[in-house]
Image 1 (cartoon, rainbow, N blue to C red):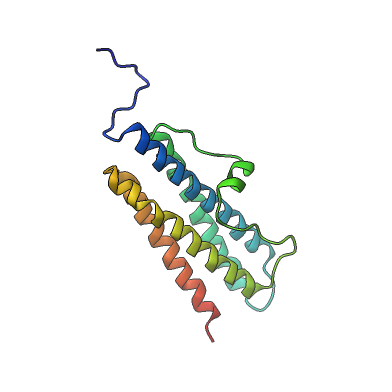
Image 2: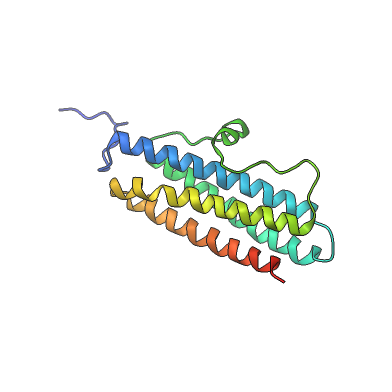
Length: 162
C-alpha cells in the first residue's frame, strides 16, 4: 500500500479535521475583526481617558495580532487553507463592523467587551469538536484564547463600573 506524501495521518479523520478547520476559520475571522476594531479604536480614541485607553488598546491589538498566526497555522496543520481576505473574514465573523464615525471612548470599551465575549463564545463552541476528535493541540489553543478573551473582557468591563 503506497501512501501519498500529501496524505495526512495524524489520528483525526478527514471529516473531523474539516469541521475543526471550519470552526477555527470562524475563530480566526473573529480574532482578526476584533484586532482591526481594537486598532481602529487605538487610533481614534479621544477624551479624558485618552492616554489610558490608547495604551490599553495598543496592548490588546498587539496580543490579537500575535494570536492570528497560531490559529491560521493550526488550520494549515489540519490540512486546510486558512481564510485570509477581508471578504472571507466578513462572511465568517460573528462580530459587527464598527461604525464609520468613531464612537465615544466608553462606547469603544463597550464594543470591545462585546467583541471579546463573542470571540470567547466562538472559541468555546469548538471544544466539543476538538474533544470528539481527541484534538488536544486545538483544545490547548482554544483554552489559551479563552483565557485571554475572558480576562480582557473583565478588565474592560471594570472601566464601565461606577
